[in-house]
Length: 103
Image 1 (cartoon, one colour):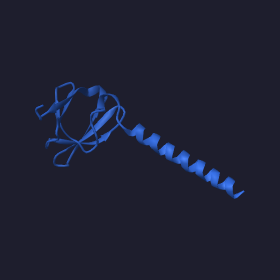
Image 2: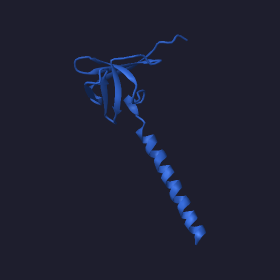
Image 3: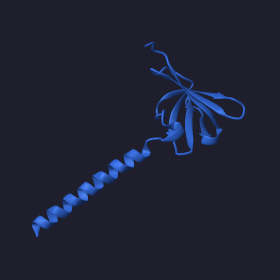
Image 4: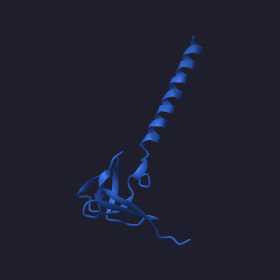
């Protein structure tokens, strides 16, 4: 009986660890926002009908930081920490990666 309890406990632990790993993988942004991560410095440019989000590699100080990444939106906080801007995916014109290091 004790072995059976140990076995069941082990199965439950393995299932919980597998679920946690799967949940972590699902939190990673996919698609348009896959190049961005929470805490990353970016600039936000209003193009009239859409926004362009630019980031540098290696990271440089920018006008905004990524606060949240959803499946169909991104939230950016201005450098002063005063306002958050939620940009829906249909309002993104481009996400631009600028490499500042020369090969």
